[in-house]
Image 1 (tube, rainbow, N blue to C red):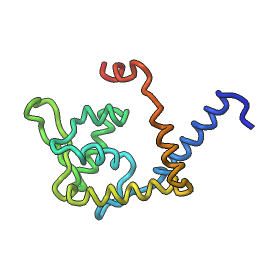
Image 2 (image 1 turned 135 degrees about the vertical axis):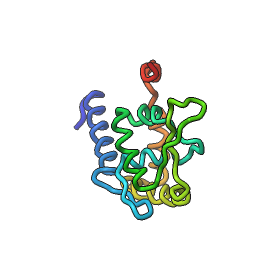
Image 3 (image 1 turned 180 degrees about the vertical axis):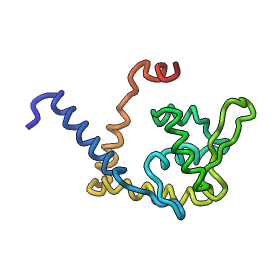
Length: 152
């Protein structure tokens, strides 16, 4: 039996970690003829909705990894012809990552299949429980100043 708030929070964090791990652990996600890992999927979701692409710097911040790590993830996607690198003509030092025309055609179907697969960890939740869980997660706030620290 859980005795106090600290113990309850520890237990909750362990369960959240397990759920996230179950959604992505060791899984490959099919995108056309290719299997993608979690990091590659994150990149596709970041760039998939933006017509002009996403700067590498932004991917680095979103993924909380080094620019070198983003480069490695992007290199694989470039080889698979799913993304391209383009110079940002408004800032020639910046490189944007964009979906290729082929990837754009497949992205909507991929998104649908991806969400179906990862949502299986919630298969035991009924609609009311999903609404309640979503509502509770919306209460989570970014700590004061966290966004400012990332920008520095």
